[in-house]
Amino acid sequence: MVNPLFKIMLIEDDATLFDEIRERLSQWSYDVYGIKDFGNVIHEFTAVKPDLVIIDIQLPKFDGFHWCLMIRSHSNVPIIFLSSRDHPTDMVMSMQLGADDFIQKPFHFDVLIAKIQAILRRVYNYSTDRMELKTWCGATVDYENNTVTNDKATIELTKNEIFILKHLLEKKNKIVSRTELIKSLWDDERFVSDNTLTVNVNRLRKKLDALGLGGFIETKIGQGYMAKEEAIKYD
Image (tube, rainbow, N blue to C red):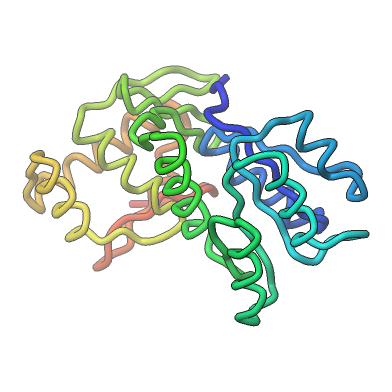
Protein backbone atom coordinates (compact mmCIF):
# COMPACT_ATOMS: atom_id res chain seq x y z
CA MET A 1 0.00 0.00 0.00
CA VAL A 2 1.10 3.57 -0.72
CA ASN A 3 1.42 5.69 2.40
CA PRO A 4 -0.67 8.86 2.09
CA LEU A 5 1.49 11.94 1.61
CA PHE A 6 -1.02 14.52 2.84
CA LYS A 7 -4.45 14.58 4.44
CA ILE A 8 -7.10 16.55 2.55
CA MET A 9 -10.51 17.38 3.98
CA LEU A 10 -13.14 17.69 1.24
CA ILE A 11 -16.20 19.59 2.50
CA GLU A 12 -18.64 18.70 -0.29
CA ASP A 13 -22.25 17.51 0.12
CA ASP A 14 -22.63 16.17 -3.43
CA ALA A 15 -21.91 12.48 -2.78
CA THR A 16 -21.21 11.65 -6.42
CA LEU A 17 -18.74 14.50 -6.84
CA PHE A 18 -17.14 13.72 -3.49
CA ASP A 19 -16.55 10.08 -4.47
CA GLU A 20 -15.09 11.10 -7.83
CA ILE A 21 -12.69 13.63 -6.34
CA ARG A 22 -11.66 11.26 -3.55
CA GLU A 23 -10.93 8.49 -6.04
CA ARG A 24 -8.85 10.76 -8.27
CA LEU A 25 -6.91 12.27 -5.37
CA SER A 26 -6.21 8.83 -3.91
CA GLN A 27 -4.38 8.02 -7.15
CA TRP A 28 -1.93 10.75 -6.14
CA SER A 29 -1.57 9.19 -2.66
CA TYR A 30 -3.64 11.84 -0.89
CA ASP A 31 -5.75 10.69 2.05
CA VAL A 32 -9.18 12.30 1.62
CA TYR A 33 -11.66 12.85 4.46
CA GLY A 34 -15.31 13.80 4.13
CA ILE A 35 -17.82 15.36 6.50
CA LYS A 36 -20.45 13.35 8.38
CA ASP A 37 -22.14 16.22 10.20
CA PHE A 38 -22.41 19.43 8.18
CA GLY A 39 -23.70 21.18 11.29
CA ASN A 40 -20.44 20.60 13.13
CA VAL A 41 -17.69 20.79 10.51
CA ILE A 42 -15.19 22.41 12.84
CA HIS A 43 -15.33 19.44 15.23
CA GLU A 44 -14.40 17.02 12.43
CA PHE A 45 -11.75 19.41 11.13
CA THR A 46 -10.13 19.52 14.57
CA ALA A 47 -10.20 15.74 14.85
CA VAL A 48 -8.68 15.10 11.41
CA LYS A 49 -6.14 17.96 11.38
CA PRO A 50 -5.92 18.02 7.56
CA ASP A 51 -3.02 19.49 5.62
CA LEU A 52 -5.38 21.16 3.12
CA VAL A 53 -9.12 21.86 2.92
CA ILE A 54 -11.29 21.92 -0.21
CA ILE A 55 -14.69 23.45 0.45
CA ASP A 56 -17.88 24.20 -1.46
CA ILE A 57 -19.83 27.41 -0.84
CA GLN A 58 -23.34 25.97 -0.91
CA LEU A 59 -23.57 23.50 1.95
CA PRO A 60 -26.33 22.27 4.30
CA LYS A 61 -27.01 24.33 7.44
CA PHE A 62 -24.10 26.80 7.04
CA ASP A 63 -22.33 27.90 3.88
CA GLY A 64 -18.66 27.48 3.05
CA PHE A 65 -17.88 31.08 3.96
CA HIS A 66 -19.02 30.39 7.52
CA TRP A 67 -16.81 27.32 7.84
CA CYS A 68 -13.86 29.04 6.20
CA LEU A 69 -14.10 31.76 8.84
CA MET A 70 -14.37 29.16 11.60
CA ILE A 71 -11.40 27.19 10.30
CA ARG A 72 -9.33 30.35 10.02
CA SER A 73 -10.05 31.10 13.69
CA HIS A 74 -8.39 27.78 14.54
CA SER A 75 -5.79 27.20 11.85
CA ASN A 76 -3.76 28.59 8.95
CA VAL A 77 -4.28 25.40 6.92
CA PRO A 78 -4.51 26.15 3.16
CA ILE A 79 -8.09 26.34 1.84
CA ILE A 80 -9.37 25.97 -1.73
CA PHE A 81 -12.96 26.91 -2.59
CA LEU A 82 -14.59 24.67 -5.19
CA SER A 83 -17.93 26.12 -6.28
CA SER A 84 -20.37 26.50 -9.16
CA ARG A 85 -20.95 30.10 -8.12
CA ASP A 86 -19.06 32.44 -10.41
CA HIS A 87 -19.94 35.93 -9.21
CA PRO A 88 -16.84 38.06 -8.58
CA THR A 89 -18.06 38.89 -5.08
CA ASP A 90 -17.90 35.18 -4.17
CA MET A 91 -14.27 35.00 -5.22
CA VAL A 92 -13.44 38.24 -3.42
CA MET A 93 -15.23 37.08 -0.28
CA SER A 94 -13.36 33.76 -0.26
CA MET A 95 -10.02 35.56 -0.46
CA GLN A 96 -10.99 38.08 2.20
CA LEU A 97 -11.86 35.22 4.54
CA GLY A 98 -8.43 33.71 4.06
CA ALA A 99 -8.85 31.16 1.27
CA ASP A 100 -5.81 30.38 -0.86
CA ASP A 101 -7.59 29.74 -4.16
CA PHE A 102 -10.99 29.54 -5.87
CA ILE A 103 -11.89 26.97 -8.56
CA GLN A 104 -15.17 27.18 -10.42
CA LYS A 105 -17.26 24.10 -11.24
CA PRO A 106 -17.23 22.38 -13.65
CA PHE A 107 -13.48 22.00 -13.55
CA HIS A 108 -10.71 19.89 -15.04
CA PHE A 109 -9.12 17.58 -12.51
CA ASP A 110 -5.66 18.45 -13.86
CA VAL A 111 -6.30 22.05 -12.79
CA LEU A 112 -7.33 20.98 -9.29
CA ILE A 113 -4.30 18.73 -8.77
CA ALA A 114 -1.97 21.41 -10.12
CA LYS A 115 -3.34 23.98 -7.69
CA ILE A 116 -3.16 21.52 -4.79
CA GLN A 117 0.46 20.72 -5.58
CA ALA A 118 1.37 24.39 -5.96
CA ILE A 119 -0.15 25.25 -2.58
CA LEU A 120 1.46 22.28 -0.83
CA ARG A 121 4.84 23.21 -2.29
CA ARG A 122 4.47 26.78 -1.08
CA VAL A 123 3.09 26.02 2.38
CA TYR A 124 5.02 22.88 3.27
CA ASN A 125 8.13 23.37 1.11
CA TYR A 126 7.13 20.14 -0.62
CA SER A 127 8.35 18.92 -4.00
CA THR A 128 6.02 16.86 -6.17
CA ASP A 129 9.11 15.00 -7.39
CA ARG A 130 8.75 13.04 -4.16
CA MET A 131 5.56 11.51 -5.52
CA GLU A 132 7.37 8.40 -6.65
CA LEU A 133 4.43 5.99 -6.60
CA LYS A 134 1.28 6.03 -8.71
CA THR A 135 -1.58 3.58 -9.10
CA TRP A 136 -2.82 2.72 -12.58
CA CYS A 137 -5.31 0.03 -13.55
CA GLY A 138 -4.72 -1.83 -10.30
CA ALA A 139 -0.92 -1.67 -10.64
CA THR A 140 1.63 0.35 -8.68
CA VAL A 141 4.09 2.34 -10.77
CA ASP A 142 7.32 3.05 -8.87
CA TYR A 143 9.12 5.91 -10.60
CA GLU A 144 12.14 5.73 -8.30
CA ASN A 145 12.84 2.04 -8.85
CA ASN A 146 11.56 1.89 -12.47
CA THR A 147 9.09 -0.92 -11.75
CA VAL A 148 5.42 -1.68 -12.31
CA THR A 149 3.72 -4.21 -10.02
CA ASN A 150 0.32 -5.86 -9.79
CA ASP A 151 -0.99 -9.18 -8.47
CA LYS A 152 0.50 -10.99 -11.47
CA ALA A 153 4.14 -9.89 -11.41
CA THR A 154 6.67 -7.08 -11.18
CA ILE A 155 8.38 -5.77 -14.30
CA GLU A 156 11.46 -3.57 -14.59
CA LEU A 157 11.58 -0.73 -17.10
CA THR A 158 14.45 1.21 -18.61
CA LYS A 159 14.76 4.92 -17.83
CA ASN A 160 13.29 5.81 -21.21
CA GLU A 161 10.38 3.40 -20.74
CA ILE A 162 9.49 4.63 -17.24
CA PHE A 163 9.81 8.23 -18.42
CA ILE A 164 7.44 7.59 -21.33
CA LEU A 165 4.96 5.78 -19.07
CA LYS A 166 5.11 8.56 -16.49
CA HIS A 167 4.46 11.21 -19.13
CA LEU A 168 1.49 9.27 -20.52
CA LEU A 169 0.02 8.70 -17.05
CA GLU A 170 0.32 12.39 -16.21
CA LYS A 171 -2.07 12.99 -19.12
CA LYS A 172 -4.10 9.82 -18.74
CA ASN A 173 -6.98 9.41 -21.21
CA LYS A 174 -5.53 12.23 -23.34
CA ILE A 175 -3.46 11.97 -26.50
CA VAL A 176 0.21 12.80 -26.03
CA SER A 177 1.82 13.63 -29.36
CA ARG A 178 5.02 11.95 -30.52
CA THR A 179 6.56 15.40 -30.82
CA GLU A 180 5.73 16.21 -27.20
CA LEU A 181 7.20 12.92 -25.97
CA ILE A 182 10.41 13.39 -27.94
CA LYS A 183 10.71 17.00 -26.80
CA SER A 184 10.21 15.94 -23.18
CA LEU A 185 12.87 13.25 -23.50
CA TRP A 186 15.20 15.80 -25.07
CA ASP A 187 14.62 18.32 -22.30
CA ASP A 188 15.32 15.59 -19.76
CA GLU A 189 18.62 14.81 -21.50
CA ARG A 190 17.35 11.49 -22.76
CA PHE A 191 17.13 12.37 -26.44
CA VAL A 192 15.46 9.78 -28.65
CA SER A 193 14.69 9.90 -32.36
CA ASP A 194 11.26 9.25 -33.83
CA ASN A 195 12.21 5.64 -34.62
CA THR A 196 13.72 5.11 -31.15
CA LEU A 197 10.50 6.37 -29.58
CA THR A 198 8.54 3.72 -31.51
CA VAL A 199 10.92 1.00 -30.35
CA ASN A 200 10.69 2.15 -26.73
CA VAL A 201 6.89 2.27 -26.76
CA ASN A 202 6.72 -1.21 -28.31
CA ARG A 203 9.11 -2.58 -25.68
CA LEU A 204 7.08 -0.89 -22.95
CA ARG A 205 3.89 -2.51 -24.24
CA LYS A 206 5.54 -5.94 -24.44
CA LYS A 207 6.70 -5.70 -20.84
CA LEU A 208 3.30 -4.46 -19.69
CA ASP A 209 1.73 -7.51 -21.39
CA ALA A 210 3.20 -9.61 -18.56
CA LEU A 211 0.87 -7.70 -16.22
CA GLY A 212 -2.06 -7.75 -18.64
CA LEU A 213 -1.63 -4.02 -19.22
CA GLY A 214 -0.12 -3.82 -22.70
CA GLY A 215 -3.49 -3.04 -24.23
CA PHE A 216 -3.90 0.01 -22.03
CA ILE A 217 -1.40 2.00 -24.09
CA GLU A 218 -3.15 3.00 -27.30
CA THR A 219 -1.59 4.27 -30.51
CA LYS A 220 -3.42 7.15 -32.14
CA ILE A 221 -2.25 6.96 -35.74
CA GLY A 222 -0.83 10.25 -36.91
CA GLN A 223 -1.28 11.78 -33.45
CA GLY A 224 0.60 9.97 -30.68
CA TYR A 225 -0.16 7.72 -27.74
CA MET A 226 -2.68 7.52 -24.91
CA ALA A 227 -2.65 5.74 -21.55
CA LYS A 228 -6.19 4.55 -20.82
CA GLU A 229 -8.08 2.98 -17.95
CA GLU A 230 -10.00 0.59 -20.18
CA ALA A 231 -8.43 -2.14 -22.27
CA ILE A 232 -8.13 -1.56 -26.00
CA LYS A 233 -6.68 -3.48 -28.90
CA TYR A 234 -3.70 -2.45 -30.97
CA ASP A 235 -1.95 -3.92 -33.99
